[in-house]
View 1 (tube, rainbow, N blue to C red):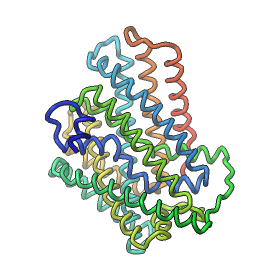
View 2: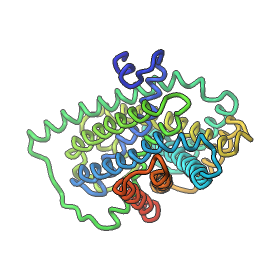
View 3: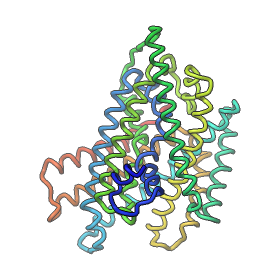
View 4: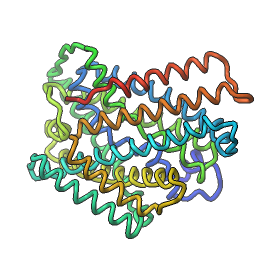
Length: 392
């Protein structure tokens, strides 16, 4: 652990809590998608899942380069609070509001998945009971945040991070064993899939899967720009490798499943072992709940900042909880994925506009190729915002 701490955080006196915070904020905040990713992609594009994922990852890393540019060059300009940079300041506020909305929808999604997985364990599939359980969880979390804050959960978060890593590694080992058995018995089947424009739009509706790396944009009070840039790059690379390995190894397991559901991964994992559904359920519960808390904290912090500290952070948690409950009873999980994907895509679109604005200014002026690159990323993000579709 000391080796990784020294590598990722070269400053002195960085403790283990900061290291755990690094993994959760930069990488593990969206590693919970590992269990959902393979089934969703397989239903959409079948054996082309690996190619679709590779394209999404490449796009994510490109967006990450824009965020890293803003960390290095835009942040110092925003600290100046100059009236000459009014457009930049207004864009920055709009991006914060957009990110808060994206976090808000993500909380609903995480709680929906958590409730569905928990009830699946007891063989209950009625959406009504899932919404009731979700309401209790959101309201309880909001009340806890209002009364005590979430600082007391930091230690629990460290264990949740380690638990998530362990579950992922166990499943990957199980997949390797299953794939070796499938190859030996020659039961691997490759189906043909037709990729339509609607299919591409639905892949765009899953853009939420690569979200998470933007967190480093808002940790300037803890780490300097170079550390945040370096850790973001490493987190994107490590998480991408995990995604690619998992989807590649899941191909044999997914054969024969053509209908998507929130808990499809539980059903398909039974083909490997009767114990895996239990392990995955526990992993999903820990992952989704810790992620919902992280996004509630992030959303509350942004709202407090936008309102210029006119409200307390703890008060925002109750407001967020009540809004999430209303949203929970209005949309299903796949609509939540698509809406959150659109919100994050719009956020990245605005970040691209900010990067383009800064790239044309004074000492930060960049060559035309870089500006065209930013506009290309912005165009893709805008298309996802406008045209992406839910899974069904």
